[in-house]
Image 1: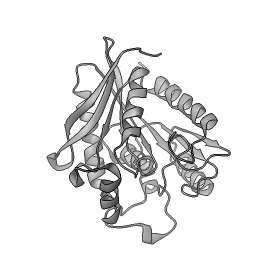
Image 2 (image 1 turned 180 degrees about the vertical axis):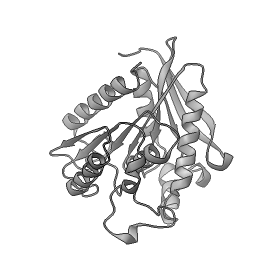
Image 3 (image 1 turned 135 degrees about the horizontal axis):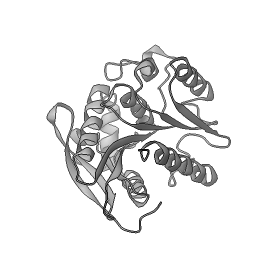
Image 4 (image 1 turned 60 degrees about the horizontal axis):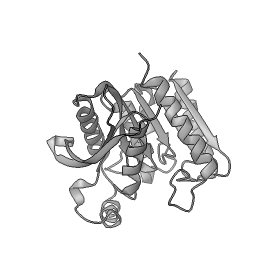
Length: 250
């Protein structure tokens, strides 16, 4: 299902602690209620890639919103703002969960919302996707794209901002999960993915993982050196099929 018409632009949403942040929103112009998707940006920040992902979802019949998780550290060029955030140790997990919950509430409040909302994230956003799927406010589907540090081997990686490895919350995972991973990725490594899959099986969760040979980190990001067109095209088909089955189900 594709839609020729869509509309996109910047909106404001209410995030963690009632803070007002900015986000990019895109939706199909066709009449009718549609599912929503919260797009969690990668570590390089809230950039052109995030807006393109939202428009892709809108073209396929979803209302998508990409909250700027770095809005408290702006304004400025995405690279500069991201560097400031990284120097501080990243965005605190509780703040991320609050902002993503707020973005989902914004989607559900729109007149064209079907009430169902999924979440997708890339890189650090993949980690955050798994986190909010476990501890957030009732998401209906989650897509983790190469989220690193969901599984943590080195305790020094646990910080005041990120005190718990998301795998530890697997028992409270509240929705089906799709995972997309490159077998050449060091973080998450194939072993990390194996351990995450084992935790999902242990807790009886609904999930599906797809692993790609010849692909590493960020293999779906067309503008980065690790982009792999064949694997990326297949992964997008998997995403749209997964959301179609889960978010469009009666």
